[in-house]
Length: 390
Image (cartoon, rainbow, N blue to C red):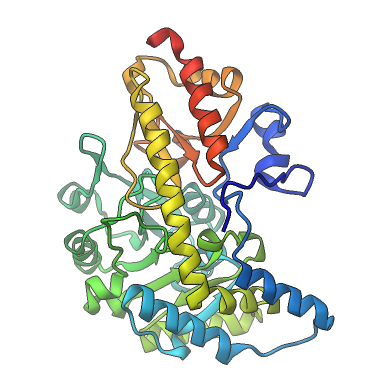
């Protein structure tokens, strides 16, 4: 796979490129979009071939792809992540934010508290509020540029009105791969406060050398009585636009409730998304992911070196994801100033830290899932925009 190939996504209804000017004031003709969390890489050939086969057949009627689809998920989870999944545990949702929304709708009520360990993926808080639930922000400790979980402080914060935790594992935006002990701590926290747990593991394939992602039920098998596992091929294979996610529920009681709600809303997957997942979750797809992570590791190292060369800036060391989380607090600048330098001088669109919740105030998130030449360009732009600090 040639990850260096520049692919022009402008004018293709690509949100990351074609909405950048309206939201950030950065023209796609001269700017770099480093905000929306998809990549600028083509999907692997095994995926493209499957889509060509479907297009060539030319019939897109009602379908039943259950056996191939669930079989591919089971193979992938067992082979890549060491977790054995039964086929009837798997539900298909329209992406994972929809999966979160379905879990909120099924297992909680309006007004219930939903715990987030912040800063964390901004769509969680959005869907919680849209569902009429209350966001409960438990701020993580920034321990010299590495996030840590503070269960003692969070125990004191609980009131009894909280009903669910949403965990991001691996973590977005901090890039942490949680250890077995940390995941067991999350499980114990949920048991102490009788909280259901959503473990969103959408980035589980995007782990750098020297790191090992553990699925929550592998880290703590006893947690399955209150667990909803969320996975998807979307970030891994750059197929987010197909909106196909998996909610995996091992517990019989919870699974029956979720199945009933899915049936009541008559929700089901789409043929293209399920076929693409089945193609991607294969030995060919696995080999492609391994190549991708080598390439992203190069992007990560290049970007981090440039950030380290700018006084006052510090990026968290990524253990997973292609999303760099950069702390600007050392510049002494107000948020408006460092954001303006990035957007107006460097002409880079990056996610604003406060949208990720408490603890994100002095950060911006940069998407590194693009061609090396664009990362080099971004490094040069940022160095120039903060050149007076040298």
